[in-house]
Structure formats: C-alpha cells, structure tokens
Image (cartoon, rainbow, N blue to C red; front, side, top):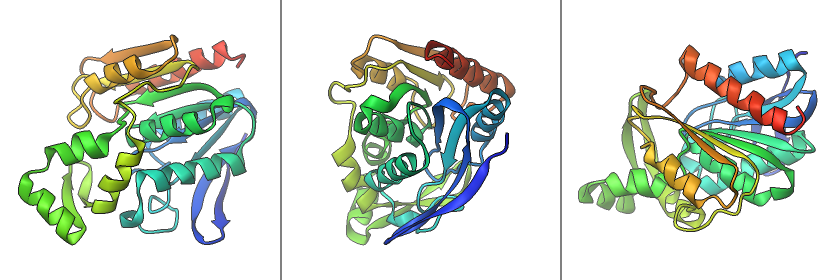
Length: 252
C-alpha cells in the first residue's frame, strides 16, 4: 500500500501538504510538534507500520510548517488546530486515533474536543498542552516580555535548529485554548508517553494531563532516560506497541 501525497488548496488559506494511506478504520492521524513537520522519524515509522497492516493513516504539515504554504510567524494554536480540523474533515472519515507529538499533543486534545464522536483513541508523545503560557511566557524574563509585547516578536534559541520566532499573537491567542486548569471532556482511551530526561516539556505535565482528562482509561508511560523527541529505536518500538494495543481495543 502506497501513500497518496498531495497539496490541498484552500480558498483564502495557505495550502496544506499531506500524505494519506487508504485502509481500514480507524484512521491514524499524526500531529507534529511546534516548528516540526510530517517527515520526522515518528511520523515515518507510523506510516510504515500502518502501510504494512493496511491501516488508514493521515499526516500533514500545519500552515507555515514543512511543505505547506503560509508563514510560520502568522501561526497560532487556534490556526493550527483549525488546519488540523480542516484536513481531517476533508481527507478522512470514520473513527480516528490521534497521535500528537509535543505541541501536536495539545492540537490532538483540541481536535478530540471538537470531534468527540470520531475519537477512538489518543496518544500523546511528550504532550505539551498550554506550553505557550506555562513553558514560554512563564519562563521569559521581564525584559523579554517587554520586547515581545512592544515589537510583537522575539527569537528563541532551539536545540534542534536555528532560533525560531515567538510572537505576541502566539502567546495571546494561545490563552484561548488552555486546558490544564480544568476538566478535559475526553472519555476515549488516552495513552501518554513521556521521557523523564525531557529538557523541553516536564514529564509532570503528562501526569497533570492524565488527572484532568475525564475518562478512566488513561495510562501514562514514563521513559526514565527518554528525551523530548522519543525517537530512539526503543522509543519507536514503545510507540508502535502503544498504537497496536489501542487499535486492538478498537477492533483493529
């Protein structure tokens, strides 16, 4: 089974690049992280195993990411959530297993809340809900906050590449989508994988997230020496096993 690759043109919106595998339900949807794309090791591994088992899968790049159109600096959490919803609605049908990495975990939760009848399961990999507020804004010194509010943008260092822009819009719009302060109305199975050596997103966030999710079928798996990406062979094997178990619970 081969992926169908395309670039979905949208009236008045940046085109979105995607790769889709036809197959049996539920459709596995991979949601990448902040300034990441659908060509990472986790996404490619999932595409490979889904192709081998005849499982439907969809992966794509948000606007301003990867091969999609648009400018990264114009993105916000709400815009990227809307990209995900539009792509999922247009390029898939039936039940979904959402797999979100880092920021993609936050987007996956927002998609799940927007399409509860379609959710068959959710996997978060170093999920980072509320990261704009708790991990970026909270860590900025006063001078950096002042610069951000005055100029609308600062550049933040990245361990994975060149510095990336943090915009005032990203921070302010992100406050409309914060989840960790109250119950999260998700009742489908949720699996949260997190490395305890993650330097970017504290693993305690996955514990807080598990506590906030309304459903009882929530499992947190901590990898003691795992980093943020969880892309080593053993980490990928854990993700694969976690996905297979969820698919089995849903008739896969």
